[in-house]
Length: 133
Image (cartoon, rainbow, N blue to C red):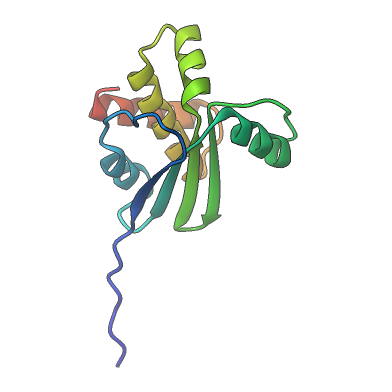
């Protein structure tokens, strides 16, 4: 008889920059959107790396604020670029920390398999309301 594995997913932050990561309930959001058994790594990186990733994976030769990469059904990575996030927050007249949290929710929703549209918007709205974003 084999024992059942009751593996709990992990959440890790890798900060490749010198900046501080805004405080937020990242792991709780990850669990709410992706489930407790999902392994997620959030990488905080610079514009040069985001531009490189965006060029390789999306054929867009510019830096972006966020990229999400599903690695398997239960594992993924979210890359967030603080300098690009700050620019975008200003465009949308949002506070940086709030917009950063919004992007994290957005990235998790993509990892769940949703594309832009009404379903994704409603899921994000529910999660934003739940977590005060």
